[in-house]
Image (cartoon, rainbow, N blue to C red; front, side, top):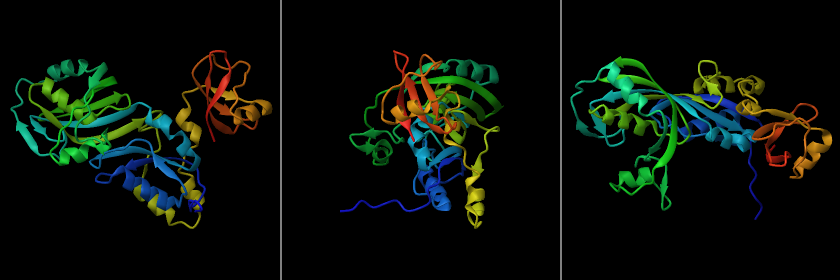
Amino acid sequence: MARRRNSGRNVTGILLLDKPLGLSSNDALQRVKRFYQAAKAGHTGSLDPLATGLLPCCLGDATKFSAFLLDADKRYRVRVHLGVTTTTADAEGEVVETCPVLGVDEVRVWDVLRGFLGGIDQMPPMYSAVKHQGQRLYKLARQGVEVERQTRRIEIFSLDLLSFDLPEIELDVHCSKGTYVRTLAEEIGRELGCGGYVSQLRRTGVGPYAEPAAPFVTLDQVESMSEDETPQRLDALLLPLDSALGHWPAVKLSADAAFYLAQGQAVLIPQAPTEGLVRLYDVSSHFVGVGTILEDGKVQPKRLI
């Protein structure tokens, strides 16, 4: 049987979508794909329907590099309602326990926040997309089933108190990939002695992209521009692939080096970095992919367009 080909435009780039409230990440992605009439699309890390904010959508060849954004650090602005614990650690869950918010002041909150900085072990919540024996945990949780989970090592780079208006506090979180902000908020509430849940969550940054500097785009904007008969206006919203990798050194390849890299061979590049990942450009300064520096100093292709 012949393989079915993807239909749609061969459009490539990264859209910094400002996901709206109440929409799943996949639904948001499918709308973007439809508005762009794109042949291929993928997002880089789910946001809960109750969360808003940055959902980078990769179109075309950008999907080949989405893993680098999945692995990137994240930034959030979160409102935590203290004194109430829910089954899901957010406003969607049923109330499990209420507790008076006593003895909680700004000094106490700052003291607790400092205790979460650095590397910590975090237990994935039952209401999460983590799989257990092939099933998503949130599906098991909805059936009333709770299973044993393994803790994961995450890192909290910064954790700042933005506002203090009991029973709610607002926090700015800069964290590693894999961090569950709902769990973090719940643990902060527990340390404060009153419990807590996420009442509002916004992702403000992924890797090199962060508001207000990054050009976030709403679905309404994309839909409105998609009605234009000239797709160039819509395509102008897309960022180039290498914008996600700007924190890595750039390496310019000779024609011969580019040829051998395309064959999967490692090559020696004069004055290249001595370690880590690098961005690769051909003789015309076109981005061609990502390489890694081997112990012998050669550049090994890791992901090419």
